[in-house]
Length: 354
Ligand SMILES: *Cc1c(COP(=O)(O)O)cnc(C)c1O
Image (cartoon, rainbow, N blue to C red; front, top):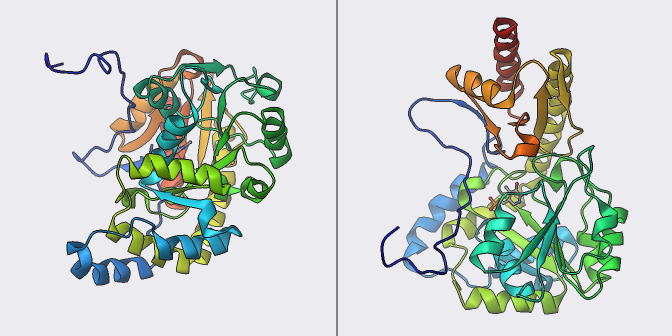
């Protein structure tokens, strides 16, 4: 820390993203990226946009919002595009929390929430997941603050039904409920259809997982017009050009071939079932997953050791050191071939530790 660093941030512990090593090629099953390339039209759209990079981007993302709003069955004014969904989550902490309005979220969930709270100097309360890793719905009804629920949750992969989330929304009429649907396209129920019924619901989604565009940084929020207006006030006060031209062009092209993306999601779900079954045969306990990853533990090998031994064999998975989940690993679903390699390597590791 330099002697100039603001005292406001001196205590901040930044979010730690999954590793992206460049020392050797790895089978990357650690950051929930898609193993499939974006739809073919994306490359063409990017090439065509190169000339126009000298111009600032459209601050309103007009064309992108128009196509996306049609797909979602909402009005363009109920939609805000952001630089990844991380950005809209940060905007939501800024817009809907303060000293009197804490952020409330589960103890085991997306690791960025406590960081967003900390950088914005917002108090937060963590509600423990139940013993079987479920969100404790009762404890959120009401929550006495702005609620952040990842649905499906990460890193557990477990989803709540739309009716269960709706209970939380109804129980907190005077607070915003943010539903982070980063993984919703892998088989869970979206709460987007509820935005016309509830003025306290904000749903966030991303192009990073189900649409193969993690590197483009494109996310969005869906909510009633007044919530979106508040979020726009924050956006235009921080970075009006938050979604660059290349990403807007890529996003438009990506949505034109959205059937391709949704077919990939279906393939991931198939490979997920196969992988879960194979890991169970090897003695793993696997939580039910509605996402593009599995959360797994084994009685005979601790999470950290398995992570390390797989890395030695060129396979990256994600290990978290939080005490409650230290024995687990989060394993992204890749292609069938990648998962076969994972199963082989894991079998070998268990064999040699026996
Ligand atoms: C990946 C992820 C995000 C954000 O991803 P972006 O790449 O910023 O869109 C948000 N929430 C959860 C739970 C995630 O796993």
